[in-house]
Structures are given as structure tokens and as C-alpha cells.
Image 1 (cartoon, rainbow, N blue to C red):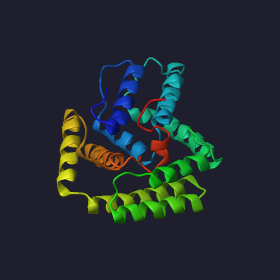
Image 2: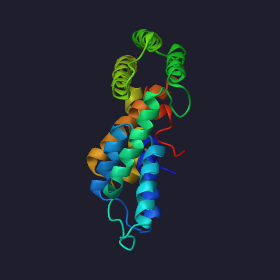
Image 3: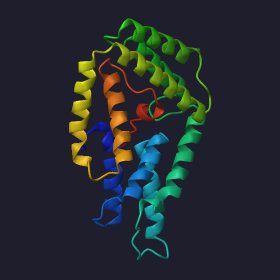
Length: 223
């Protein structure tokens, strides 16, 4: 089990690729940065694993099957193809767990029921819930950016009203859980995981999930 929920995305990809490649070597810094790009693009874990599996299945039946796949970059094209199929499904209004409209309503309902928010954060949550119900952008790229901007606005409002001691304790807990990854990942990748973990924990403290289709589909858990 990964030391942190956000790190699970990275660990699951590493374990799947290494096991399918049949080689004990772990990921390189370049590989970790590639996973980071997939994570920043909001590609769910199941989509990445599908692309890796497709790439390695094709390799196993190809002319160069006796040669080991040396890098995760070998799978990048098939991961992109899997991402495009996922994006097409989203463009038709479908996510893994529910029709898109239903999924956005779940976000709005959670914001209505958020726990222990200060007055400023409560007002921001109510505004975002109303915006979700009034209509979100239709395209995947616009929707992802639209949700990210509102999540950032909500997080800023929450952090302005939280006691500083609570933020320090949360950071300490995240740093402790990510300690096993220091030295294994490039600092930029670890910093990305840390920021995502802090955002997730801040929202979870108020009964909220991240405002993204990545998290709605269980982006950090294998399907």
C-alpha cells in the first residue's frame, strides 16, 4: 500500500509497468516526470494502465519482443490513445461513475453539506454549488480548468479561516507519509504529490472531495 493516497497513483503505475515488463529495475527520473505529466493532465489511473497494457501487449507480439522495454516512454503513445478514448466518452457526457450532469450535481450537493466552514468559505462553497447547477463548460479541457479554478478559490477561502496550527499539523502529517519516497523521486514530482495531498486533506476535513473528474473517477485507485 502506498504511504499516501496521492502517491498511490505513482506507485500503482510503477508496480504495473515493472511487473508487466518483467524486469526488477524501477522507474527513472524521466519516467517519474512522465507520470507527473499524466497526473497534471488529469488522466485517471485506469486509463494510464490501459495504455501501458496496450503498449506492452503490442510489444509482446511484435518483431522486437526479445528486447526489453527500457522506459515508460515506450508506452506514451498508447497512453495518449487511451486518454483520447476517455476524453471522447466525456464529450458524450459520460464519466465512469455517473452521467456528467449527475456527477456535477454530486459536487454541488457536497458543497451544500460541507462541514465546519467559516463564513467566507461557506459563501464561496454556496457560489460554486450554484455555478455547478447553472451549467459548466461542455468541453473536457474547459471543464477541467473551470473546476480547477473553483477548487483553488475554495481552498484559498478555507485556508484563510483555518487556524495556522491546523495547517502546520496537516503539512507535518503529509511530509511524514511521503518520507519513504524521498530519494526515489525527483523533487519536482514529490512536490507535486505533496501539494495534491495537502489539497485533498484540506477538503476532506470538511467532508469534501476534490473538484475534478480525475478524482470523481477514482484517479488514484486502480479500477
